Image 1 (cartoon, rainbow, N blue to C red):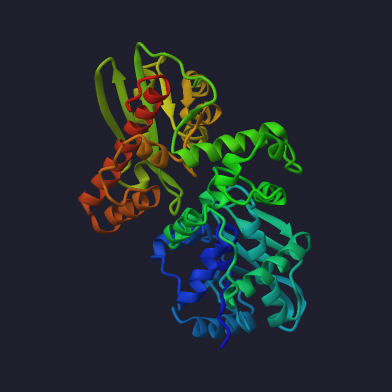
Image 2 (cartoon, rainbow, N blue to C red):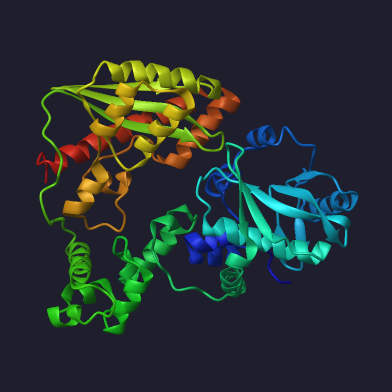
Length: 464
């Protein structure tokens, strides 16, 4: 019997084709439901129902996919207005769009047909969303005799964005062909990316690429660049690290500067050493400094913890601004703004783009005084791009955890991660588990302390 292919296969394929391969061999998705929903970028049912509260909705709430498919077909035959979490099947293809919406038009069903819509929290219309929509459209064509022209995505703010199925159809079909070959047993070439960290089989992939000294160990190398390197017989990290200048100059389609930078990354990996390519552009500090990290629950579309490490000379204090319930998000934000207002001249350090983006969105949602909005724009310092510009680490990834752990920092919880922070917060909300809440607070504190360690290391306070 052929193994089933669901819409989740497109997400897995886009993140890491070997993930799809290992799951097909194991015969099941081993992720826990909450992590699966987090990675699929959806919302919990309670939030989705709020978004659909202005519609007449019939929900298909059956765990068995075959039974759910039968129920969905019954609801479609009745012509109900909106079907939530219906299941569509044709052959080995099984899909569960969040919404099936009735629209006017001739089909096998009568003077109407259905279009599919997914609820996604991302504000960007990603390729995997559109490929999933094309997948829904293909199955709908088999059921109702009409393939929808458009697919749709609803965001957490109720905005619905449409896209033309034909614009992605050719690439979708090529992707589906690849997926079917992998599910049927064809093993894809391993390729290490940060997105592959989402896979339950990431450690297996990482070990595999390390054992074969794979070029994808190099941070942010493109597949096209790897193909170009192979065209001049550079097949491993060691080959690249030891390649003569003549060979480096001959790499097709890669500039000399880029090729030399890739070679320095290969040298760093091969020799397990940090290479400085210039001074790190971070300012000196002699007053109060704030280091900030945010924890968010994307399944509820809220931010529940803004952690601040306040440094004043040799005195460091961690201050958590916490929303113990989703309804307290606005109160937490106002308390944080009052705190920030006391430090108009303090620089605010963070790692990555996320914190500034959240502050901008929270300002729109709950308001922010102009002087503090200006402070966010002018006084926030992102450590990550300043490191990238000047330092090559012997690492495949430059996440906070990867770099800080390399420099000797340890998180207290053995399973510390952004995803588990959300899991702990859900455990607190659902079960009043105070230890779970403390785990996410401790995790946040460790993040800000790790960020401060990186900043100090980068400006010269380094320990061997």
